[in-house]
Length: 516
Ligand code: SIN
Image 1 (cartoon, rainbow, N blue to C red):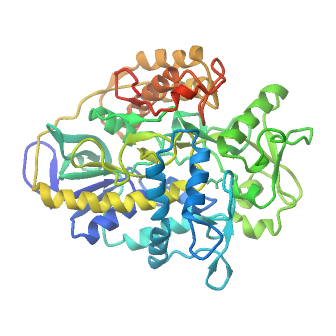
Image 2 (cartoon, rainbow, N blue to C red):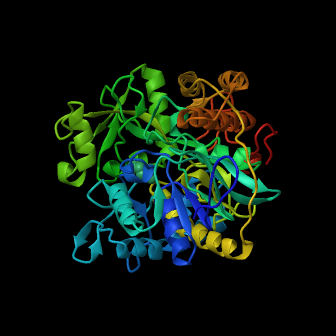
Image 3 (tube, rainbow, N blue to C red):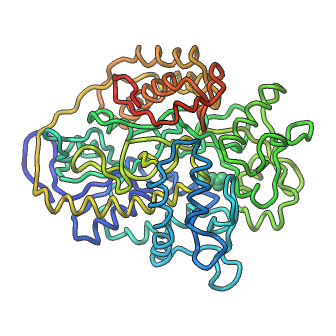
């Protein structure tokens, strides 16, 4: 609905959702079901391939009734992987709600692979004690989830080329979002806003994330004065396809391959994970990524290899990986796949409860952008689509409820300039100094770079993303500097041991001390 006003275009909605991946669309559909007028924003110019959901390969970790699995076992695996920082109540709440959320996806038309008619085929990934990962199209689970959600949301008001620049607020409550679209600057006045913007992989030169993963939601929350938590825990996937020094989004080589028997070896054919962890190649992801990183440091080799030659029916079961390998001239049925660790997932984010509620009335966050306490210091494989679905739905319902109670708030806003580093320089500095292994000296170099960032007007998607990356880098580095120990995905070369007294999450606000 358009409403008059000064300067920018102005509209009104009940709930604005920023992001079109699993959490965003699950939230939008839930709010719509509750009668809210919902507007969904995406900064992408085309829907296909815009979200990390689309690229998810392995699957959705979920406890399927009438199997040998249990909520208790899934919770225990999640907590064991999380390096002492998971919130057990949050984990239990999300895991317990997984099956109904996945069943709803099936109602939306998602089709998961079956081992027999009516029985999902379940695979395993690192850190899981059971086969509990449902998948689709072999290794194209995310594409199927996205297809089903896009279809369910096709009557909603979903807008491409809309960059959410700033949360608009009146005192302690949200009143809308300042947006940059092809029509220029505008405000969507709304009592509820849900951030579902995904991750921050483009803090690094190479990542498994789509090009839009630039820490937008973390930055929007920080600029609105909110805390983020656990942001030092950036998960590096152990097996991103190695293709020389190519940057940007690089293909993922799913961990499910190791669940089906693939093994990690170095250039001499020696196992990378032998003796590192009792689960070997299926150890939690932080352990395997660190083992790969260490082997590369010891040998000076540019990559290690995944040997998938013994995986049964490889090309049919893993068509996405097969195509990515063939595209770089590797036939994985007869040759080894060159891999390196790649920036993959932010375990931390905007601090929320398991309903997506932040400390600001009307502002919600769900999916990778949020920190619910589910992942702790290291996310268990395939728990991300699960969390996005479960918390997305809940956040949508909570946002609709809030909107129904909050009336029609409205506040004026003008865009502000933000500090922004040069993106390539920042990515190089983060890659060199804040990857799998960090130390105080390197992290301080990134902090100095960020401190020297210059003010820019937020007059394009590019400028906004550069500023979002800069704000996000500043809190990642502050949290990583403050955590003088190694835990989960945070490895400090200068503090290699885990300090049992530091088994607490750290929150950080923009330009403030890190606090536990
Ligand atoms: C993978 O398929 O290896 C990635 C799954 C995930 O990130 O949870």
